[in-house]
Length: 103
Image (cartoon, rainbow, N blue to C red; front, top):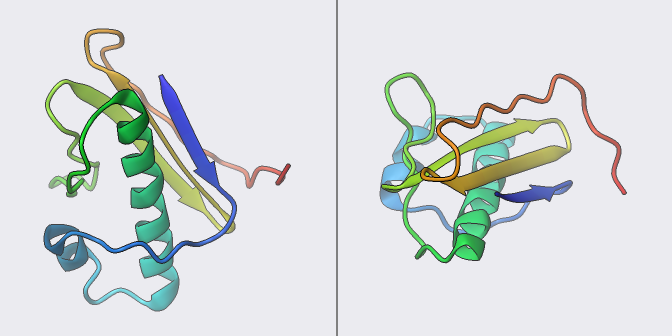
């Protein structure tokens, strides 16, 4: 399993299908979404996967590349993604109820 977390916003580019999801969102939501997707892409890269869009499904959950399961979470001042190969683990739920303390 690979876990990536950030305690600050980044301004990475989104893929067009990701940008559509937040086209009408306020700036705060756009930063959260963009930074969380950046965490997810970095986690996928560390697993050896190429940089790909991570669109959102009908339920709002991320649509991971074939063979990968993962989770993205964010709250004020914190963004995180964890991914694992599906053969290693069937499902990976993650939810942060409280804001973690920065290291």
